[in-house]
Length: 144
Ligand code: SF4
Ligand SMILES: [Zn+2]
Image (cartoon, rainbow, N blue to C red):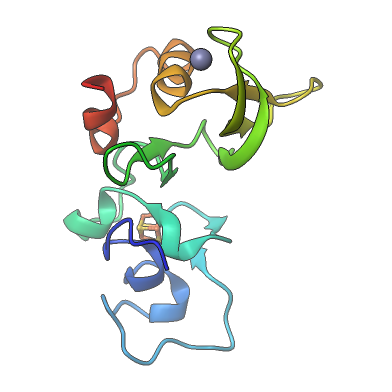
C-alpha cells in the first residue's frame, strides 16, 4: 500500500469508526468512515488527511487533503470545499494545456471535470478558488 502518512482518517479519533481513540486497534467495523467534526463520509480514509488529526480539536482547521501525485515524495493536495480531487486520470491540463497520461481532476458544477497535469498546477487553480485559505500540508508542492 502506498504510504502517504499514518496520520490519516482511518486512524483519527474523529472518524466515528474509532470512537474518539486515535490509532484505535479495534475500530467499529460496522461503521463506514465518517468524519464527525466535518460531517463528511471519507471513502479513501487511508489517503485522506487534515490538521485536526494532530490538534485533536473539534473546530475544523484548514481544508481536508487527498493524496496527490507522487512527485519526489508523497504529496497532499487540498479538497475544494467538500469536493475531493481524483488522481490517475489522463487528459489536458486546465492550467498549461499539456496533454498528460497520469494526472489529476476535480468535479465542478455543471461542467466537465477540470484536469491538471501536476500537483502544482492543481494548487495554482485551488488557490485562486480559495484566495483566503491556506493549505500548509501542501507546502512542499510550491517548491517543486
Ligand atoms: S478529516 Fe481530519 S478530523 Fe476528520 S476524520 Fe479525517 S483526519 Fe480526522
Ligand atoms: Zn499543467
